[in-house]
Amino acid sequence: MDADVIVVGGGLAGLACALRLQREGLRPLVLEAADRAGGRIATDVRDGFLLDRGFQVLQTWYPAAQRLLDYEALDLRPFYPGALVRIGDAFHRVSDIWRRPAQLPEMLVSPVGTLGDKLRLLALRRRALKGDLADLYARPEQPAPALLGELGFSERIQTRFFRPFFAGVFFEPELEVSSRAFEFVFRAFALGDTALPAGGMAQIPLQLASRLAPATLRTGQRVARLEADGVRLADDTRLRARATVLATDGAAAAGLLGHEPTATRGTTCFYFAAPEAPFAGPYLVLNATGEGPINSLLCPSNLSAHYAPAGQALVCVNVFGARHNPDALETAVRRQLRDWYGEHVDVWQRLAVYRLPQALPVQHAGVTAPQGPMRVGEQLWVCGELAAPPSIHWALASGDDTGADVSRGLRTGSSPGPRPRTAA
Image (cartoon, rainbow, N blue to C red; front, side):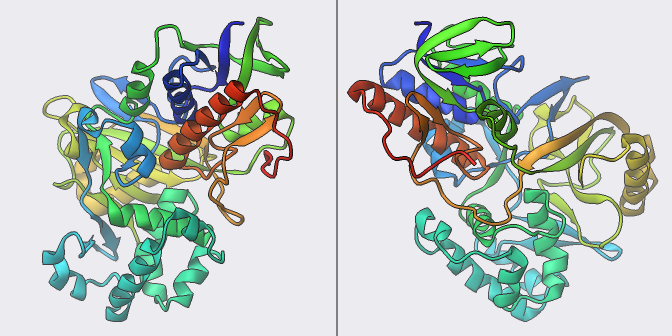
């Protein structure tokens, strides 16, 4: 045997699974097709700038992240609890008044919504925080805009806040996502910080990978086929193990299982080097004008100086979809940026553009919390994106729970029997 357990995929779910197996006294082998661990979470270094691959953040409330990550070592840098929203020709600050109560007068006169809308936020907050996650995911499901309408929110606040803010989380321009997914994300924003590790988002998988025993993680190893007692690599190498865990992204997992891939949503992310940031403070900027390609904008170097060389700033601009011509899209983005910030943007230098057509699976209907690990064969388990909703929390939780289940299965020699959970 080459290992006790082969874990296919070195993203967060695969790393969490391998760490749990290691803690249980087993010898895992993680096979990652890319040249580094992390899956979708990656940070590139270019000309002294740190470029996260797409808009990625950590919600510090995530229970699994609190259990499995060392927040102090990550040196987390939080965003302001709220946003700067572009409405008409001006920016307006939106604040979470439960965390910034001093901003209540400012919020009461903000044009982002009506006074009634601001009072209804309390009811939404109470609803999203009620019960545990099992309760949340068991609620009747409907599209998020229908829930907001049912709760009495005006079209104004939906257009000026909910849609640009939360649509940017799901990469769904009209926020046509499950109300369960929406409430999960709302709970995360309400109960914790939205943060970046000081050294880039890649520090999260790097921290996990650093805890694995030497030679546990092998990069550049693409699995071509699952076999009864292991896997076959693209170069025809055969690796054997007592059990296998499939922890890749949804498309790759579906391919190895012979299923149709799940639908995804895409995003395009531009990075610019600027002599100075266009605004001060750790803010996310939202476009609520209904015009132009920009959905959101942030300056990671406002949160952490590690993101940019001394004397420069890093600007990140996010756009829905990933099928644009990048040069034509940049022209439109720059036009909108110039309208917002003036001629200063003319000297910004494009560092990179990331087109990510499979940034996230769609979360329309049928979103549920995992009902236990997904065992799909005698010695085959699935964790991560195909077994749980997409988020850092669910990736870590799914991997950790699956590692525990594999360990129990190997200790007892139990066979799966009836399996209510199957890969979609």
